[in-house]
Image 1: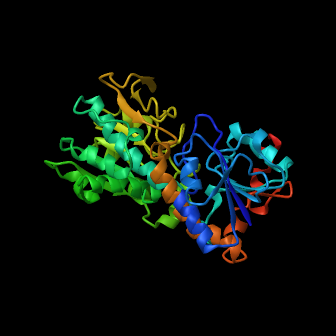
Image 2: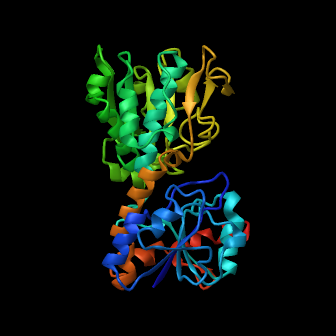
Image 3: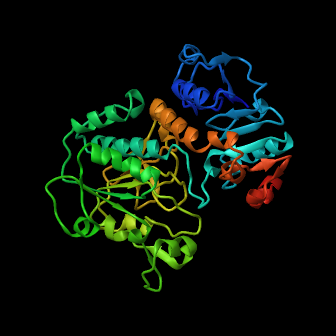
Amino acid sequence: MKFGIIKERKIPIDRRVVFSPEELVRLKKDYPNAIIKVESSDIRIFTDNQYSSLGIEVTGDVSDCDVFFGVKEVPVDFLIPNKKYFFFSHTIKKQEYNRKLLQAILSKRIELYDHETIVDEKNRRLIGFGRYAGIVGAYNGFRAFGIKFELFTIPKAETLNGKEALIEKLKRQTLPPIKIVVTGRGKVGMGTKEILEGIKIKHVSIDDFLTKIYDQPVYTQIDVLDYNKRKDGQVLDNLDFYKNPQDYVSDFERFTKVADIYMAGHFHSNEAPVILSREMLRAPDCKIKVVADISCDVGGPIACTIKASTIADPFYGYLPSKNSEVSYTHPGAIVVMSVDNLPCELPKDASEGFGEMFMQHVIPAFFNGDKDGILQRAKMTENGKLTERFAYLQDYVAGK
């Protein structure tokens, strides 16, 4: 089996990579029959020399490889027919802007394995950059708060060297006794929690968060049944919510009345109710001043996420009374952080963590006959057609 690590070509540039040099050394050690080539790149967080100095072949031509590993979408002109590709295609939700990409993949008879489709038998995602999105998103939330209220100014995460450096910067700041609510207990939510725990923000129960006054910053982390409730008043379980989201409405308003910062790290399905509505944000007793929408679902469950912001310009103001964007310095504005590629700000940490997960969950499948069905479940296309699992994309591919 011949693996190729491809150069990232999407604009804006992404410095992340699926495997660090050290992880490729481990791959070669664990699977001596594997042949590995790294396509030369001048933007990757790890230099060509860092790979070649460890005995990894770096070349300008990886076209003879069987399987290609990348992070972002591969431009259509660079797709090689009849190969296997792993990257984030951003097509599984029928994203309009990538329709031509999936069409090209099918016409070139490429086998596509989207990183988002790598799941276990219970459909739980096995790899991703969610943890690092949570880490950077939480840092950016505090950075927004400091700038908005002229309390402190800290540098962008992309200028610092890893999670510990972010924590050290935040530890040096003095925070007022604010309340922070976090949605989500997956990789994004737990990444957010790493920052909160790292800077010693006190964790409190939901009841205490809603009812008690503190003389220090505190946070609570809530799950789907904490911020949604059944329309008929029944209290069931998470599984019922996932199966019947249409039977629920948001119960998040009780948090808007006491929280200063909202850090959103949840997964949201299309059928699930809005979490933070325009009405909640317009309410006279809404206390939220900063929304760090780490999930960044534009037009989704958080009404103030009206656009994706960027690493270069991460914050904008949202004026609830007008449902419109204003300067975040506007006295009535809620500051919104909705960067949609947060892990790019920690490319080294994110790449190392991603490679570890990939080695654990994906690479063995190439050498054990895919005994756990990892590759079979993840495969989106084969022989110019969508696989059965992804046949729901047929209308999307056809442009309907």
